[in-house]
Image 1 (tube, rainbow, N blue to C red):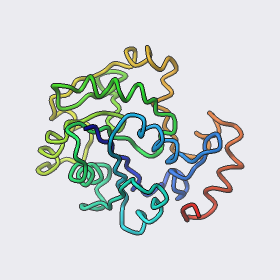
Image 2: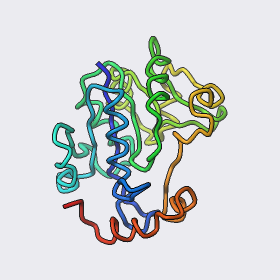
Image 3: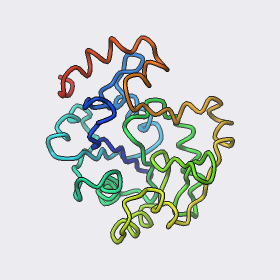
Image 4: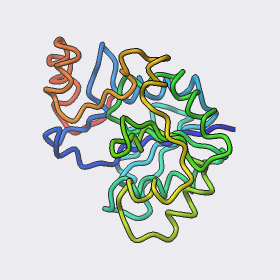
Amino acid sequence: MRSAIVLVGGAARRAGGREKYFFTFRGRTFIDRLIDTLREVVDEIVVVARDPEQCDRFGHFGEIRCIPDIRRHIGPIGGLHAGALAVHGEYVFVAACDMPCINPDVVRMLFDAADGYDAAIPGWNADMLEPLHAVYRRSALLGYLEEHESLSLRSMVRNLDARYVGVETIRRIDPELLTFTNINNLSDLEQIDPSAGHDLDDACGSDQGPS
């Protein structure tokens, strides 16, 4: 069984307080695009939100479970902890909600690369890694997250028996490396989709989920 964790609980400060998962790209919200992509690859998807109220925004996905952070206000580490406790697969793909172009074939490749390791982590170089676009062994993730001092993802990765997958390997599948596209603010999105501004005003003008 393969699982996925999607982290949506950030405060969205760099996005002007707007919830990035409801930004639209080519007519669809980030979260819709991401969930549909992951459905092609995994057997189970768990969305991790900051609180039960935020979870209410994802009820339209039906079979997708949304759980709140258990250890709140500690960043992605808290979301990973809650998600790892909730999933059932031996290996789990972890993604941030602000990545609308994740490539399913890259995800499959990372699952294959993780076999026999604690993790498969894409990397641009030794210091520039993609820990929120990576596959982890659930037991290793929990073993670290249940007893740790640092809240740094880098520290977590360095404490795992990780296999590092260079971006040049990933480029064979995704030549433009679009799978790593990360949107922190509205100007980032408009750079890859100049028509997005109008959609964003409609989708993100309020702090409410879709009707």
